[in-house]
Length: 304
Image (cartoon, rainbow, N blue to C red; front, side, top):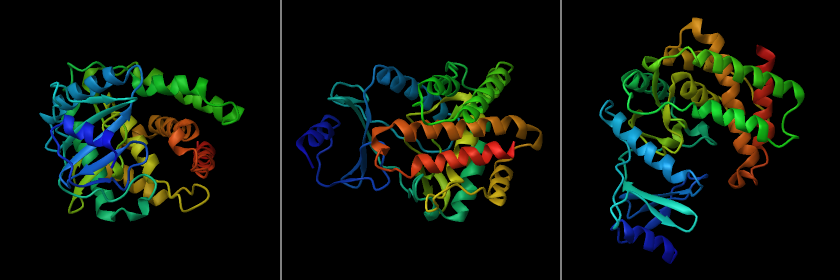
């Protein structure tokens, strides 16, 4: 363990005896300290601190509405809930008891009962927070990201047909969301998959890694989660499993009358990860991801 990491841990009052990197950590530096605490970083960009503080305000509101456990961030010596070291923002919190069974890239390790429960729990969480986050601004973060990324995506990623259909999906969802009111908006984890879920006896006990959390419409979360869980990276291309798709939506309780607009959210969710796979430096060596995700997009485009 390097001295910089010990120094960061010390800022939170942690004397390091043991330290190991979390096994499912890919996009962030996440360490388990003394088998009792988590030390986690995120890259420092111009808006990171603002987003971090908004995230904390949101999570504070959600904690009062849900029985799920969330990271209880520890104050550092300055009294803040973070430490900035170089180009990283660090936070620390006591480990939430339970198991992270797998991540987004090795879902074959997810227990079937845990898979069922995560959809049920997501539905409950959305219901508990819907219309009850009035103090939190709704900023259309998901749609704004999609709009920017469709412009910024490297030119050889999408063909004209794919790009046109994604622009149509964005327009349809934006028009749909213009008719939503405060009572329709809820807590969105934004990255709700088994790598960010702590299970106890195959039941969701806690949620971690809240960098993408926000207030929004529930389909953002459901589409992204289903998109993630339908992938099997042991295959070279995506294979649509209708039974799995239907079971997930039944487990969540999506009404058949909502399927038309939900499909548009699914297309946007597939593109969301495609853009990240194409642009994040941490994923550059995982060359199978982009072709797989493109095959996922093409499969959905053929269906509607």
